[in-house]
Image 1 (cartoon, rainbow, N blue to C red):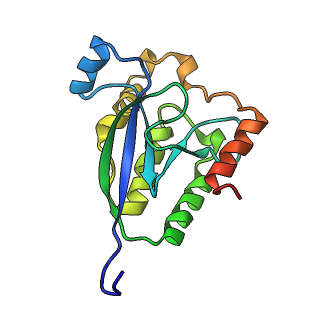
Image 2 (image 1 turned 60 degrees about the horizontal axis):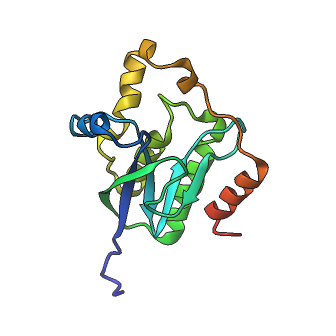
Length: 173
């Protein structure tokens, strides 16, 4: 690449339904309401955030547009472009991995969509559309309608699954 050319790497947010598709979820989607999971896709990897009961990273890497188990791919949104080098991109991911620990996950105030928004912002200066996390926003405004079991952080993963996730995050090192 010529010295005067600036590298522009696309940054996507992949959105997943957390509830199986039906007429109600489709209607909700068009009204801007739904229960969604999201992850950030960059350099052919997708980074996600999930909870567990330990004070180490909740950030993990999956195959783009496949998502973690139990979600249904919905769409990909181009948030913007980054001019950061691969090393700088990795530094952003490593910093977010320290900040987004598994035990800091909460469904309404620090979930996968909050992570995706923050990662996209640090890479591009732009955030994904607010509708992706609207259900959590509504849940904080009307907590009486959210079942208590949804608010509690998930239980810890098995040790092997955590090691596998850490290996993916650090490129198999």
